Amino acid sequence: MALRVLSIFGTRPEAIKMAPVVQALAGAPGITSLVCVTGQHRQMLDQVLELFAIEPDYDLDLMVPNQTLNGLSARAIAGLDEVLTAASPDRVLVHGDTTTAMAASVAAFHRGIPVGHVEAGLRTYDLARPWPEEFNRRIVDVAADLLFAPTPLSARNLAGERLSGRVIVTGNTVIDALLATRDRIAADAALSARLAERFAFLEPGRRVLLVTGHRRENFGAGFEGICEALARLADRSDIDIVYPVHLNPNVNDPVRSALSGRGNVHLIEPLDYLPFVGLMTRAHAILTDSGGVQEEAPALGKPVLVMRDVTERPEAVEAGTVRLVGTDADRIVRAVSDLWDDEALYRRFAHAANPYGDGKASARIAAALQGEPVDEFAPTREEA
Ligand code: UD1
Ligand code: UDP
Image (cartoon, rainbow, N blue to C red; front, side, top):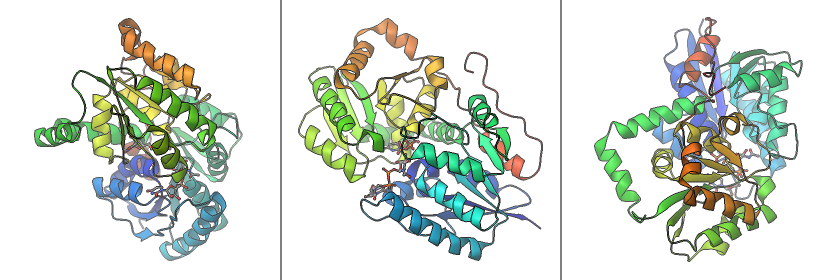
């Protein structure tokens, strides 16, 4: 009898990071792969499903404008309970630290269905940062019997917590998605030309600073600092700031009112994953509070300035390609200016490092689910 595996996800980053897993499971002997999306995100989720040709078996279509954490959690647990009954999976897979992941692990646990956690063991050990993600991922790890840790560090975190699940170091599946997408662009000249055309508004003489931001703990004062910094950086004549603005109204409204109308600040809609990878490749540096971008950019050799004070992804900080800069305007302006003005500093920052994965994470997860031996991910000494 084939093992029925139900992958549950709901937001853009979960979809990007679960897409290679869903693809690996689709071809895995002995596995029947099912997909449920909660629709915690809508437009930002759908673009990923389309790119990776994933047709969900279940779609709860939960998103409402400016949803609350409790409202979303309640609707997700109730909706997922019905899906678990209908789909009758032998196990569920969830990803990361979103409300969808937390609710899915609770719903499966209450139904006695084993949970596999992809991207297990990330920690700041500060429940306020990131909020509510640090809480969510710890709940999932308590519920899970299979803990797919992306790196040796995340595996060590789990080992220190006396959890009951088996820990397997797989690498992060985001690197699988990134490398496949980068290669798809590189192999298709017409596609590359279309991407270049799409960003034709960028001035050849200016270097691109790519910005993303959406963390809840940065709402309010944090975003004020970020916008002030971007406004000051826009005074430089050698910078093009491209900012695909997250659709959360707590981000979109303040960012657009603070920064609209400046010629070299390009506030655009969230980009589909493929053009976003193209833009990361084109960028001189990246300023972000995103988890996924912190993992992807080092693999592309792009310096990353992270607008947070702590990170659960310290591996690239240690590898020297990521720096924490917080949300203070002066500090952000100084850090970006240093990268623009100091070529030697830039070159030290801009070396490719891959501490998060080698592109084989999804194959390891599929192998583990098939009961096969797994050759765990081990970063090279320089990257570890
Ligand atoms: C969520 C996750 C966060 C993750 C982020 C990735 C939680 C608590 N937060 O935050 O961990 O890093 O996604 O982007 O799980 N919206 C749209 N269209 C979309 C997506 C969002 O309009 O496609 C708007 C809606 O008004 C929605 C709001 O954004 O209610 C907030 O979405 P939500 O998923 O609750 O929070 P995010 O800030 O996106
Ligand atoms: N991303 C994208 N389009 C964008 C911005 C980001 O496709 O306009 C991708 C990015 O490459 C990464 C993921 O979305 O894989 C990160 O999502 P986000 O920053 O929303 O969430 P986080 O990773 O912080 O949970």
